[in-house]
Length: 199
Image (tube, rainbow, N blue to C red; front, side):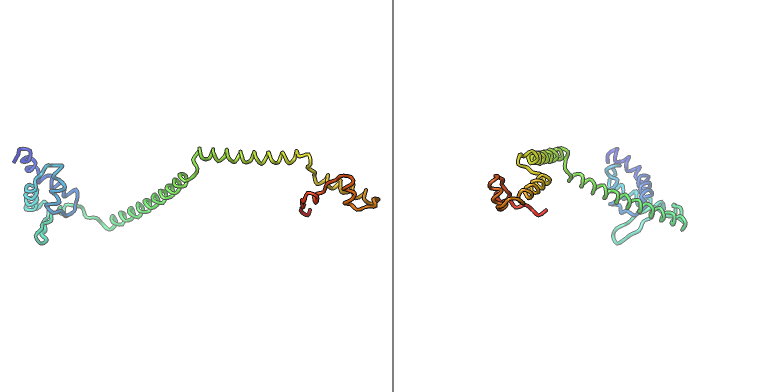
């Protein structure tokens, strides 16, 4: 056995006792060896020997299940927990559980918000969309301006005045309205097959 391994084996009982008390749960020799070999460089034989030694000294408890031995800290060394303490711990657990649930719900809301923001248009995409809408709007504005500026465009008021004027003339005209329009050179919507909606 190397000098380092011998020193580790000599200190094994103290290391194992402290470990079992801190963890306060049952372990087999294999479990203890697996958990501590890397940190403390303990060999399996040293672990088994130290556990048996501690059990013989009454510092830890040993129970045999079939072919396997289980080791755990002596429970008598720990303070008894009263019912009041247990109720206090239960209340803390309930409060902490509610807090965890609240945090989980907040996380879900944040995740949903993040997903929504991620799926929304990016700034460049929004700028492009705005430009296209502006272009479309400009096209409609131009068309409206052309319609208003058209020389043959007649407002409803102008059309009504013309109708009243022609009706007044036709009262004393011996021929039909159509013949009068033809002689004067007035073109009607019907001449161009345009049907106006009823006012």
